[in-house]
Image (cartoon, rainbow, N blue to C red; front, side):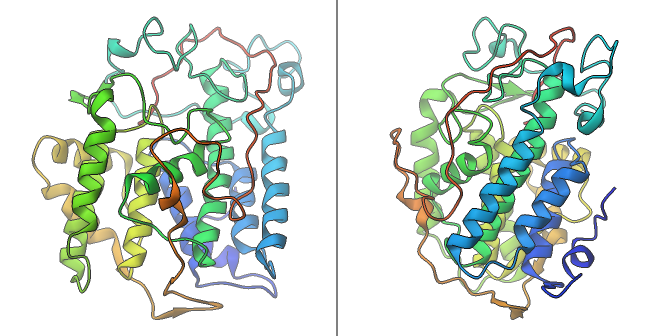
Length: 370
């Protein structure tokens, strides 16, 4: 397996970045997926490193490199089922092979499944067997978990690299969160970046009703944008960021990918405040407990998690200044569906093409993690 010490990995060679914003970004990517019970295999970790550490001289060169990296990782999941499976194996779920040899997504002990509100009969996002519709054409939950983790982590690396280069910054807006979600999951789901149109609940938490998401999210972010965010002490910043994430989590605006996109959003806000938020040392069980308690009115544990994980940014990192002065491009997103890409020229373009090939449906899929 590749080392999880991103600083060391990015510090090798003539274009060393360690200790750097790139190293911190890579560590965050690994942790962001780990908190969902998903581990990135060697190929996915290497792709994220390649994207973050590439010494591109300009944005055009970097985009060309990122497009090649994404094509490489996507090609792993465009192979016919027979090419990925040992001869004689009945399904890719029961006998994973090659690049898909990792275990299926892990769930906390005793974690209940999604509400009956999301049964395939009423969930327009799901296929008949419960697996979410996706651009890979996959109907195996195991395969989709692997493809989503690899492709979404590479897409997240592109997003974080663009932020490091000063091409955009996090904003206190629902449009920014939508843009982040689309940037991470747009290569996996056609509906990425759009608020869900069904009601969902999990672990006894009933998230915002779908018809109220737009109103609730915009009202919340509008209030946050007019608040006082400058000159915060580490403790006050931790409490404010914990509240921000906890409220986004309670709204749960998307059908899938809420936790990963909201953690990314809050991390970008933290950087604007002068802090690094990598969630180091945080485990999945503690995360689930913290957001669950916040949802039920007790912010104590989530505040403690943020206080422990929040670290002041160094005044300057090798090669790049921490201060980002670029305009927040994601704010250009509107509430309506639009073909215009707010990240055009910043991130590699996406295609709506759906790959069609057969996958096993022998196993009952596990519930989505967030």
